[in-house]
Image 1 (spheres, rainbow, N blue to C red):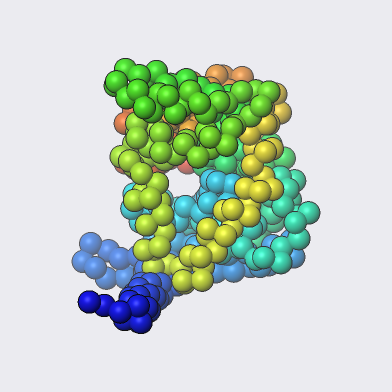
Image 2: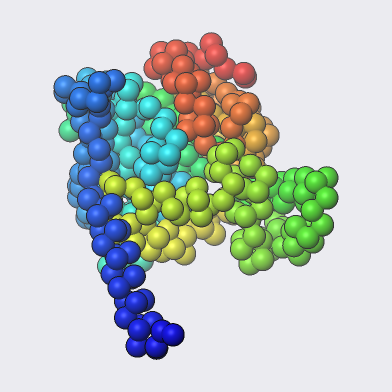
Length: 364
């Protein structure tokens, strides 16, 4: 029979062992880019770098098989949730055709700092930071313009950056494009109640009906606690094949070798910190009246099964926008992250339409 002292010692040893494993799988550098033979690609870049952006040290991963390729700045979702880890579980292959920059926004991941001034955690500051990062990249890579890609919250931020500084970008790409997020959440709740009902899951229907969402009251605490479980249970969340945020997000973040152990902890600290400042505006803002014209080509990549940022609302928003060239692309096997879910189709569109400023493959 194990004594209390033995249990404590055993638990301590187990924790030390787990800590050692976590330390070992957290070297803190992205893997080099390799060719088919497993050799590092000559002239490629795969690095974690930091820069001073509007007075704060901010981090990013930069990957490219050829630094002569155009630069693409990726704006992650959240608010406050970096997505570099997702490129490990669902490789998008962006680094094959672009010098892709996975910037982690003020207060998020590599850029989290508990001493960040709370009054700097605003949408206006995020727009200014994105513009400053863009200027940094233009200088570093000797470019006149870059491409801007926003995902989810990043699309909420990105389309406003594109409207504010169109001369900095060749084109804007919105993946899982936000329109009015609160309306999207209302549509998601209605869909989930109907679909779980059709499946005969009376327990989930009851829980969802007790988790209201409305234009006047916003998202209830009950809905926020149930949302991810319910969405991923139907394959309409982050990706079509992701059945749980624990196995699909939480575990992969901890296993991602590009971060140090402290940086992994800061991903979760930064997500909580960022949402505390940015979430309410994100939910409440109706982009369909805020941004209706863009002075650059605009492309929306949307999953048929996207109920995180509703596909139909994104299409309705797209139809209102005026732009010199625009294209809307439905990915029939995707939920919220089509470039990660259907990477070959995404790459085809990027190469044949976006890089050429055309829309020949567009649905609309």
